[in-house]
Image (cartoon, rainbow, N blue to C red; front, side, top):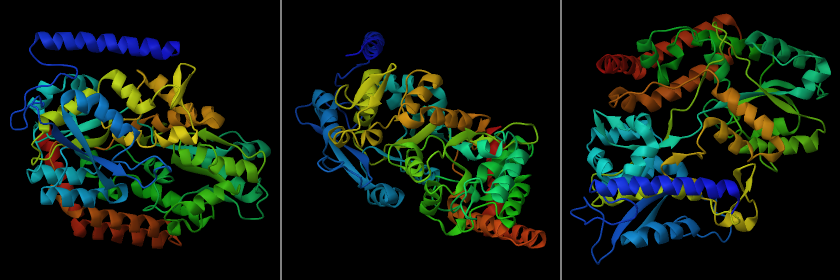
Length: 535
C-alpha cells in the first residue's frame, strides 16, 4: 500500500478508535457492535437476522458480467462488512433512475417502501413531510449516529430540518461548482484576440467568430451554442442571463425563485440580450429542438462551436473517447480553454451553485428498522469505510497518483466498481479533507484535460450563490411547480426567438401575467410568508 493511503487510513482509524472509546464511556455502542432491538428502535442482536431494505438506483448501465444492482461486488462487500457483524440481512431494492420519483411515490403510498429511501426532489420531500410519511430522526441520530453526525456537520443536517424536526439526512456535497464557460483558444489565437473577461468583451468575440469564421467552417460557425432549456442539463445560457440580475432584498430573493425566476429584477434584460444574440445569428439556430443535447455535442465534435457554457469538468466532454477527443480527431489543433466572462453590475461573475448537500435520505414512517437504518448510515460515515466505498480497493479499482486514488479503467475494474457512487449515500463526490485537494482529485479523472477540468471547476464555483432554503414545505410550490416550470421554459424559448423588441416585450410580459395566474402569485405570496416566519 502506498504511503499516502497508509497514513490516511491509519490517521482515520486512530480518530475512529478514539471516538469509539469515548462513545463507549458514555454508554453508547460504537463501531459495529450491535444494540438490542425493540420495535425497530435498536440494532439487532437476537438470533434471527433483521432484514434491512435499502433503495438503490438502477441506471440500466451495468457492465457485462457486473451483476444486477441488487447483487454485485459492493452489495456483497456491504453484507460482509456491515450486515454480518450486526446480524442484519441487507436487501437492495432497485428503482429506475429516470422514474425514481414516480416509483418512490408508489412504494410510499402502498406502504412497501424500503427502510432507506432517497430523492433529490424537494417537492417530493415536502409532500412526505406534510403527509406525515417520514420518521423523525433527531433522537435516532443522537443515539446511533455519532460518525454520521460528525461527518455531515450541522450545516448539512440543517437542510433536512422541516418544521423544526429532522426528517431527512442530506448527503454531503464535497464540491459545489456547476456551470463553466469554454471558448476555442485556437480561434482566439488565430484572430489575435484575448480571452474575454466581461460580457461585452464576450459578445465582441462572438461577433468576430461569426464574421471571420476562424475555423473555416464554410458559414456553419456557431459562435455560442446551447441545447433546449427543458432538455439536457449539460449546456445552458442561464449563467449569462442571470448575470444581469440586479441587487434585491433577501425577501425578494426568497420569493422570486423557481418557476417565477423570470420576475427577478434584471432577468428580463438578460433574456433580451440573448434574444439580440439570436437575431444576429450568434447562437445555435435550432437549440429548442435539441432536447437530448446530441446536436450540441455533434457541433462541438465537428469544430463548429466557438463557445458554450456547460457543467464544469463534465465526463461527456472530457473523458477518453468523448466530445473533446472526437473534436481533436476531426479538427487537428482545436482546443478549448475555460473562461469566466459573465459579469454583473458589481463586476462579479455570479452563478448558481449547488447547495452543500446532494441526495436526501429518508426513513419512511412504515419502517420497523429505523435504528438499524441509522446504524448503517453511521457505519458508512466512518472515514475508512467511506474511502473504500468512494474509491474502491487499491490495486483492484485504483492506483495512487500524486497522493490521490486514480481509477483503474480496465473492463474488469469497471465490472466491480460501476455503481459505487449510488451505494455511498452519505456523500456526493469524494472528500480528501479540503476543497483544493478535492478539486485536484477530480481533475486527475481527466488525464488529457487535467488543467482545463481544474480551471473549469474553479470558474464554476467563483462568486457562487445557492437557491434559498425554506424550513417548511411551500404548499403552492408543491401544487403548481410543474405547470410553472413548463410555462417558464415556454417564456424563455419564445422570448429568445422573438423577431424584434416589440414582439419580445409582448411575449415576455404576457407570459409573466399567465405565470401569475397559473399559480405564480400564490407561490410568491407563500414564499414571502415563509421567509417572514423564518426571520
